[in-house]
Length: 624
Ligand code: ADP
Ligand code: MG
Image (spheres, protein in one colour):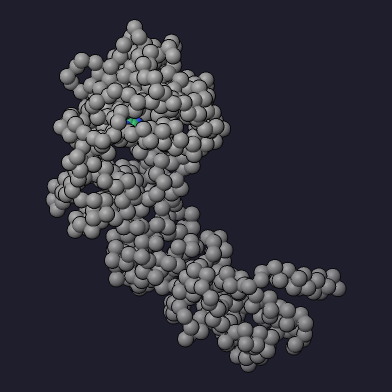
């Protein structure tokens, strides 16, 4: 062995196939940004120190319990080596085998998959696959890891590898706690034996590591050591905020905005929160679950805490750190400590305030936010009605009068006509077809604005949204209309005389039978021939939709068919031979079309053959 390993009792192990391939790529094809190996090793050292600190909260039986928690880097230019040593938790022999030999396979496989994606910058993402350690082989001819676990009973162990197919494990004489990583640099990586090069790299990637990093003989730590969230706002640059977000989430897109708070009352807390720009987590996202990282005095106590924000804000990413959380709490009891509701309240208010600010000052960004996360807020209204007052002003809607823009309820209210007492909405399947709904006839003709609710989540939202600032919301399909308020731009068509209309109603009843509860005249249809209305005693239409979305066994209640007594189609229908085939299929078609607009048709394709019959009839008539 050329590295001068003196230990003789070395055992040889073979890397798994995936790890071999991974090493091969790292050694032979990644030359860019090789400095990230240092970030990965320092991040491991920092993890090890954090874990030790957490252990010491409850365990007094720790090797070198008074040793400073630190990282030390030494370089030897002549020997072409770097040594990185930490006083962290260390590893036992089994842990070394697991952590540096076996465990990485699944991560290695995923990393190999990622190498097929040309867009991914591999050195940036390697850390998230749980294989960050291996990045050292980008610069190393060989690596030797020597470790002594915090457990006073454990023995020191050493691991040695050159990046070939195998690694070796043996005993070592290292008496102090922690892990030492010795790297023999490749000839073309000599730059990393320069202290200034290392220091620059530390500033760039590892400044916020919460433990001092010493380089060479200097007594001063190179890194700033304070976490970004504990740094005063005015000292943090926009680029640092972005970098932190990238590092914690590995989201390739910048966040929409960030919230940096530090408060002392009613609770002490530091928080750095981000509103992502996409609801969907990227394929390579570091965050596997929702939730915020929770620190107590700089110690990570929960990686995915879900109690710090209400569920409807679960898309928010970031870190919360509080001095008030007692240190000696286990991860489990944190949840039950009375502090959590207080933290939650402060954080919720901060996020809502940020969103209000965005809505006001950066409308475009807010609309991006709304498109991505609107459904979460709508769900919040249904699930957390006590927060509805906070959420309502953040809602955005398309309307019949402004179908391409987003309007807030506030804007809608400001546009209501004098004497309009109700906020109207219509529920439908999609924004285009809902505009053709017969329920809108009256409101269109009158120029009344109606909110278009076409997102499935809207029906759930309606369960909690009954009023906005004391103004009631009403579904147009159910709203009473005030026909004394004459439609503005409508000349009144002549109505079918009552006796004739009654005959028509009879035709409809005969054809449709018990598929409808009633057939009657409507006073609110203009362009449309007919509409379906709810029978007076039936379940609320919005709720019907909720049941349907939930896939509940639920039969849509039969409806009332309302006809437009002035419509030319009906006038002509009366002129056909009573009970003729054509009359019957047209009645069927009118009913089917009404079902279709409601999104209630059980079998839309069945309409096609009937439409053909109608076309044929029309052609015969016109070519006679
Ligand atoms: P990750 O850090 O994502 O788990 P790495 O490949 O960077 O993946 O490290 C693999 C594992 O090796 C770590 O999870 C840890 O258990 C162990 N390890 C690496 N470096 C150290 C260290 N300095 N001290 C203690 N354990 C370490
Ligand atoms: Mg790591």
